[in-house]
Every structure is written in C-alpha cells, then in structure tokens.
Image (cartoon, rainbow, N blue to C red; front, side, top):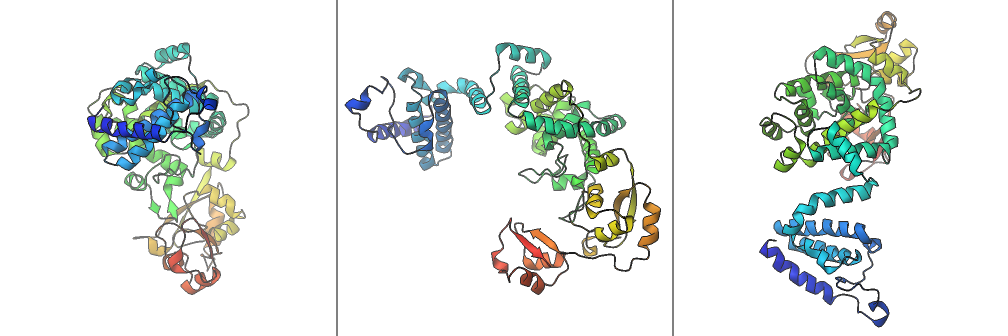
Length: 456
C-alpha cells in the first residue's frame, strides 16, 4: 500500500472505533471475536450481511484508494468509513481483513468483481460451464467466462429483453445478411445491432448515439447520413443506417486482421483507441484487458455479441411477430417520391388515402409531421418520401394541384438544453407572441429541459 494512504487509514480506523456503539453485556455476545466493530448508524447499508457486505466494503475501499490518489481526502475518508463499517457486518474474522492493504488484494480483485456481478445478477457459473465456454470460444479464459456469463444472463434475468430483441432481430436478419454478403463484410457484424440497440429504431445512448446502428451525429454524417437537427435524422432510418454502418465496418476491417477488433473499434469510436488496436493482430481478450487498451464497456461488448450469437442460434421462437410496414421496407416493397418544397405529411397522406401515422412509419427519419423548413437546407431542396407500392403516379398527379403544401397542425415540443423560445418559434414558423400566449406567457428565461410546451 502507498505509505500516504496507510497513514491516512490508521486514524480513520481509530476514529471509527472511537465512535463505535458502546459494547454492553447485552450485545457483547453478538460480536464475533476479532471483528472490527464500526458501530450502528441509520443507514440503508445496515441490512447487508455476509458476502454482500464484504463485496460492498471492497467497492468502498477501492473508492477510498482512488479518491486518495486524486487528492480528494474528504471523499476518501467518507468511503473508508463506509467500507470498514460494512466489513464489520460481513462477520469475517480479523485475519481476513488483509484486503485493507491494497497490494495484497489486487490479485483477488478480479474474483471479487465476478462475485459482485454474480450476486447483483443472480448468475452463478459452474466449473463445467466455464470449461465448455473455454473450448467454444478460444480467445482467452476471461473472454470465455464472460460469454458464458452473458448467455446465462440472457437465459435468466434478461430473458424478456433477449426474446423481445430476438423477435425484432429475426425480421431484420434476411435484409442484414443480404447487405453483408453483397458488401463482403464480416458475418459477426449482424449480431452487433441487437447489442448496440436491441433493434430499437429510436434507441438513444447516454452519449447521444441514435438508431439501430447507434451512430454518433458526426460519425453518421461522415458515413453519408443526412441529419438536420430534430427535423430529419437518417440515423433513425434502419435501411440507411445499416448500409452506412456496414460501410464503416468494412473500412475498419481493412485496418485489422481480426474482425473482432473492427467491431470493438466501431463501438468505442475513438481514433486514439483505434490507433492503439492496430498494434494487435488478433483479438485476445485477456491481453487487451491486461494492457488496458480498451474501455471496460467496449471489452464487454464483444463477449456480449458472441453470447447473443450463440444463444440466438439455439433459440427457436414460435410464430414471431412481424411489423407489416417494416417488412415492406426491408423487402423493398414501396415507392419513393421526391419533394421539392416543405410539405406536410397530412397533405401527402390525404392524397394517398392513408393515415399520417402509416406514412410516418414508412419514413422514420422525419422528426415532425412534415419535411424540414427550406431555410435549413443548403442548395437545392430535395427530400425523398416513401409511400405504399403502386401509388406514385396517383401521388404526383394530385400533388401538382395542391397549392398549400405545408399545413402546420400544432402540437407539443419537448424542451432541450440550450433551447430558446425565439428559436422554437422560428423552427415551427409561429410568432413568439403566439407561442408565449399558448403557454400562459411562459418566462423565456425559465425554460426547463424535459418539459413539454404547446405549439399553437
């Protein structure tokens, strides 16, 4: 242990004992000999016992170490006190407390993480299951164990998520297979999508990646996806997003011998890490883990994909549901028309004799019930709109006679960080006064992200 932390921990420990609950005749018999007793506090952690208390104590003590090294002694002290208190609840004898010295515990850290993960997820792997996985996935012992863990997770705690995503995945699979074959892309790529997004058209990550292929905005634009703010975002169009992602994977694959590294690079999306990965000729999970080349989230990404692949190939769904409009999209069973001026979906749907909702289902890239405002478009205004098969001639014939092509119908808008009323009014082509009036003369300086406002 670093000397500074050792000297810091000693007064913490003494202080913890000094503030302990007074040991009386009544409770003396309840204290196991040699146990550090940190006293009783009104704390939700009081209910943790045995292994759970031990695991949480280790987590707190690791945080104490990290904060101490960062120079944050107040936080380090707080986590140390919490850790020693939980340690007392674990009912372990004093000779088991050598993990306070982090040099001695570092070799046990991996086992602790496995135990913690097992308790949190209710997953316990047998020795036989691990041995089978090691033979099946020869990319490092830790890799095989991770795959086995995730497979068991998909079969138990995450079973509903797995089955729902698999049902959606099966509808996409023929389309993805045809693209991968045509573009000669790695076959493993198709199992990347359910792990990235659960095959949810409108999936959004905490860092802003969107759609089935989870493109960040700048990466999406770099690979040919058109994005115009909230109005139009091709990351949400499954056909275009999948095509762009396969192009991206092929580009990455040209830099790596092992396709696993290409898929890992797709997930982490950082050129710094990609450049580091180029030094490796194969995906050896244990080696990458040891060298800390990839973030832990990315390292877990590849075992998740293999687990999904293996389990999905062994799972048979009876009568999986299919979205009929999505099926039309995936089988190219639709027509496309070109719009040269901002047009409401209400107008298009009325001409075709279908609902606005059906039209929107054919065109998930459009964020509102219209094509984008002309002021947002540089150069020639041109947008493609998908419509039911066999309706193109009818549409063009009637559309030519429509004078008012844009009819804003009103509705609501969810405030985002950085929005101003003036900008919102401009986007929706309403006056600032009317927008304020419709919302009870809301104070422009007190917009709350996440709250909806009425668009008159």
